Amino acid sequence: MAYWWLKHCRNLCPQIKHVANYSHALKCQSWTYGAAPLRSYRRGRVSGIHRQPNFGLLFDIDGVLLRGSTPIPEAILAMDLLKGRNGKLRVPIAFVTNACGDAQAKVDQLSSIFKIDLEPEQVIFAPSPFQSFMHWHDKRVLVVGQGDMKAIAEGLGFTCVYTMEQVAEAYPLLDMVNHDNRKTVAKGYKENNDFPQIEAIVLMGEPIQWEMYLQLLIDLLLTNGKPDHKPDVMPKSHLPVLACNMDLLFMAQACMPRFGHGAFLVCLESLYERVTGYPLKYTALVGKPSEITYRFSEHILSKTAKRMGITRPLRKIYFFGDNPEVDILGANLYNMYLRRYRRLSGGREVSAPEQGQLDKKAAVASSRTVPPDAAFLPQTARGVESILVQTGVYKPGDRELRRSKPLHCHRDFTGATDLILPSFEATNVLEGIKLLLVEEYFDPKLP
Image (cartoon, rainbow, N blue to C red; front, top):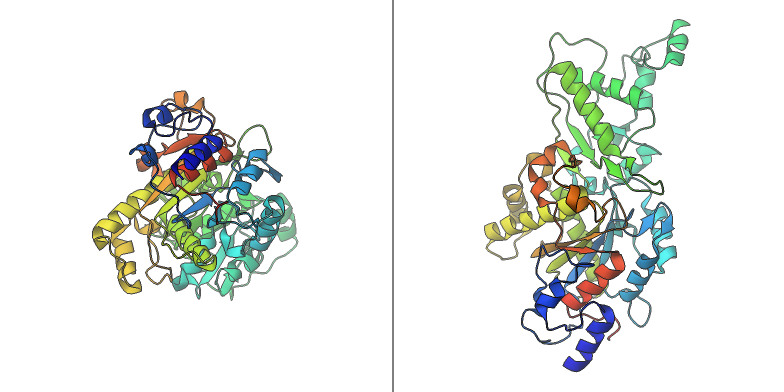
């Protein structure tokens, strides 16, 4: 068996001429970053092949698997490596993207491209963790984004949803950036003073008319959700703001990265502080790189593993990303969170009420704390390995520019920018999959 496995390893990773030679493995710079050891090779021998995985895989989509709607060729081959002889996936996977959209539509797209069976919950959008924010589900919330945001928010559990168009209609004098609206108001207008007071703002994605949204959001923040009066003094506090998707840039089909929702947040933060003299504060930040999203993703992986009939608890998570300051930073932050959690729990599995208490103690900021009433499966992962691919935002030349390059991570994560180094670096997702299958002694093609 050992001879067969050595031969199989060489087929998976041709860069490894001698699998037992750990130092040689680290020199394969086309697929290792050198930031973390290949623990599988330390003893220099193969102890056995696992028939069930005790690990799960999380994939970013844009820049890792797809460029726009076009699949990256190596990604198709990578998914094939994870399938058994019957063509079914043998490893629990989920897709974590900072986009916001229709989960079923994305499932249909990914299933068609990669010929795999998926459940909608396996596509984790930036706002998906809001499903667990049950405290806010009955509040009157203003939801910001593109598309049918009311339907998306209701699908997450929010029951009393309002849009910016409704606010603009109720208070027609607020949107004076729109010159056409000035002409309309000049002909006559009527305010709706019975419009309900907004209790929280949920920022799910960048809108289309940034100028109008920025103006009205500032108005709502200054007036505690009822923009029918001017405040006597600038308030030191404001409405709760729940935001997701902090990506400043993302990679699509254009030759250069495009502005993401993080760019809109930078504008909002700057304007609010310039107008009031106080920094904008977030009640919750979800989406990558927030630890909340990675905890939610582990929960989804555990559910997927149970549905696949896997009885081994998940002990390790591999995250594939193309953005060091989003994907890799988040994976490393969650890895540190897991260490704190394990230290607090003593390494034992705990009940749901105690799990909520430990989540709060292990968090580094209230805005990145898992809600205490979140109905998650038990936390079992012992660590996260991040794999940075070169097919998206990140390029190998960025290593040399890191010291002089401006930081693109969100304002509230800048203190953790030393955590943007990955466990491994791979040319593409295919090389990363080959690496981890050797690392985990697992061959999906074996029964």
